[in-house]
Structure formats: C-alpha cells, structure tokens
Length: 243
Length: 243
DNA sequence: CGATCGTTTGACAAGGGTCAAAATGCGTGG
DNA sequence: CCACGCATTTTGACCCTTGTCAAACGATCG
Image 1 (cartoon, each protein chain N blue to C red):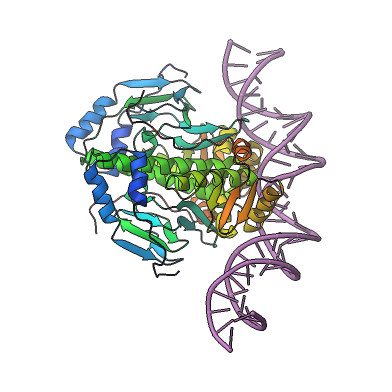
Image 2 (cartoon, chains in turn purple, cyan, orange, yellow):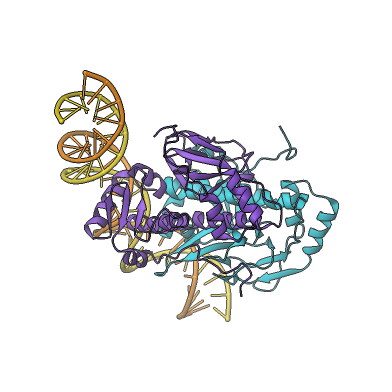
C-alpha cells in the first residue's frame, strides 16, 4: 500500500463534495469527473507542496489524508490543518501567496488536477464555498488552541473531522476512520503525544470514545457535542440566495 | 474621543496600503480615495459585524483597532485577529460564509465602503493579496497558540503587529502604538491577563521591551526576532509576475 | 474625592510537559 | 507459523509553566 495505487482512488469524491456545496452545471460536473481520471499518487511522508513553493496548479485530494504543517527551528511542528478527501489544494486565499508551510502526505494520497473556474460560474461559487469552509476550520482551530483544554480540543476536533469526512461519505455520525498516530494528533492540537494518550484514555474510561480497527467510535456523540458546544460548520442549504 | 470623530480618519490609508500590495490603475486609486470620504464611525465596544451576520458590503478600516472574536458559552473569549487601519472587512474567504464570530471596535474605529473589484482587475489582485496576507496571519496565529510559550507568543505577536502597522506608516521598526488592555492581548494569545502581565514584566526586566505613552518600544528588535525565528509575512515585490 | 477600570504582585493549585521504561502492535524475513 | 526489529502506545514519577484567587496599587473621570 505504498506508491502502488492498490486502493480505489475515490473517483467522484471531489465532484460529489462540490455538488453538495453548490449546484453545478452538467458541463462543470463532467469536467470535474474527467479530471478525476488523471490521478497522481503520493507515498506516505512525501511532500505534496514544499515550503516556500508557489502553487501553480489547482489540485484536490481524492483519497488519503495529508496535512499542512510548519516546522520551527528547534523541531517543534505545528499541523495547521488536515487535508481530507475532497479538499482543494491551492484554491482560495491559501493558494495566492508563497507559503511558509508545506503539505505532506500522511497516508498514501491520491490527487488530481481540478479545472479552473470561470469567474461567476457555479463552479467558482463552489470553490469559494469550499474556501470559506476551510477558513472556518482555521478559525475553529484557533479557538481550540487558544481557549480549550486537552479534552475539549479532542472532542471538538473529533466532531469537526467527523463532519468533514461525512460530507464525502467517509464517516458516519459515530464512526471516524483514524489513520493518524497520536503524535500527529498532538502536533495538531498543540499538546504532547503523551498527553493525547492520557486524555484519550480518560475519555475511553468515561465512555465517550472507543477504538476499533483503524477507526474511532464516538460512543456518545451528543455528550461530546455539549461538552464543547460544537456547531457544525456547514449545513445543507436549499440555495445560496435564501432569506 | 468617543463617537465624535475628533481624530483624523486616516484618509488614503486604504488606497496607499493596497498600492503597496499591488500596482493599481489611476481609476482604481481614484475610486478608492473617493470611497474614503464616506466615513462611518464606530464607538468603542460597538459591534461592527454581528455574529452570524452575512457581510453584504465590503468595508475597510481607516483608523482605529478592531478585532474578530468568538465568545464561548462560559464566557471564555478568543480574539481571532486584530483589524488594523488599512485592513479589509468582508473580502475574501472570511466574507463568504455566515460567520460564527463578530467584529468589535476596540478603539473608536472609522470605516468606509470599498469598491467592488472587477474580476481580473489590478484591484482584484490587490484584494486577493490582502486576503492572502490575512490568511498568513491566521496560520501564524495557529503556530503561536499551538507551539509557542508565553514569551514567544508575545515576541512573535509584537513583531507581526509592528510589520502590519508599518505597512500603513503607523509603526516604526521599534515603536508600536498599543491601545489594548492586557486582557485583550491575553484573549488573543490564549493566556491569562495575569500571565501577560508577568511575561511583559519579565521582558521589560530583560531589556527587550518598554512602555511609553500608549506605545510599546522594542528595545532590541533583533533579539526579539531571533527569539522566535520571526519572518515577515510580506516583502515588497517589484511586480507580481516575477521569475 | 469616591468609583471604576486596568495593572501589578503574591500565594497556591493544577494542567500539562518531560524523561524514561515497559507493553503492545505490526510488518518482514526466516 | 514463529521470531525479530521497529514504531507506536501506555504508564509512572517528577517538574514547570501557566491558571486561579485575592488583594493592593495606580490612573482616569465624572
């Protein structure tokens, strides 16, 4: 399961996600689905975008997990956000400037190029919404890191990640695939891996979560939710011109 | 100095800042400068954008400080970012979705509307660059909160804020106007106001910073800079189509 | 001149970090 | 199928940074 594309690359993941964000025209859907056949695979740990590079092409993740990260001089690493199937790379504010972060494959990752959207098109609107969602997650992360203790950070992150994965059909209300090491999660949540471990143990003891296979099971999503006053970033809308 | 616009509103702050980010056409500059005459003043503590509201118009800060913030159920507050003179409101990713944060005036704030940019215009490019800068600051904030201790957070924030203010001529390399209470700074940096105080005292003792009037003086910018491996988010570029 | 807000300081508590070792899991090769 | 080596998880003991509570101090304003 290295660079060999053994697993299905998740065809239509991107087109479907964008269709949930915004209604697309048939031609746009076709263009997206066509793009999804030109897959590029990245092995574990490979840099997908190097630090300081400028994005020239717009891509999207078809399958696998990646992360945007920044490493300090002394080796401390902050994972800025995870990139999940369906997420766009190099679109929106984060694509415009030269970056001081890199994007690294956590599992084997499949990406494809994504068509340029004409200004004003439905596709452009979908991209903009996806961008806005990403921004939302960044701000939510700031709140996690700035105000929440370890247990709250875990709970909030689990719920957010569940919802993001559910948007592409990869998670259910109480089950989240989990390919990360506790150290990666620690680098994302701004605590040490030892403390992630302790906090997860405590939550397990309290009947909040459970591990099974490569997944985390939320035993009591409702209790988790009120623990952090979690509100989903996105709710299906009938159209973008509602009241 | 309340709602009465006693201080000059900082005419041309916005147009000048955008011109430093990207070369603008005369007509665009004229449009911006015209817009800067229709000033709207906000008194201290007034909500400029309410939580959950959707931005309908694009504005910019002409003078004064504001902040984007989110308050948790139990009263904890996270300041997501500060809005300084020249900063745009409601442009880019943060304008697209309905927000879960509000924008509040910290000092008296003057804003004006800002023209809509035609797709592909130089003005649109300037807006995009401003948006990218804002994104950069959000990511930098995540790193501060996730990986840095109190002293590093302070140093990093001071340097970033200096550079942002210097971009509109409001700070020099070693002097930053400082209208915040320590509690606001605490809510931004994810520590308590008591600890902000202690950390600032320690930095004062170490000859790093100093207070004078409503400003903070950086006594040793270079030492501060290497304390956190600070790199400016923005450096003047000859043009956007460089090698 | 009181009232109020912000800063400063102290004593103490606690959440989380550090270091190190043991336990568990897992892919590889024999 | 077993044995080995490596990565990850788990646990314990101890320490340090930061939070909490409270009081004193200082400045600003009606």
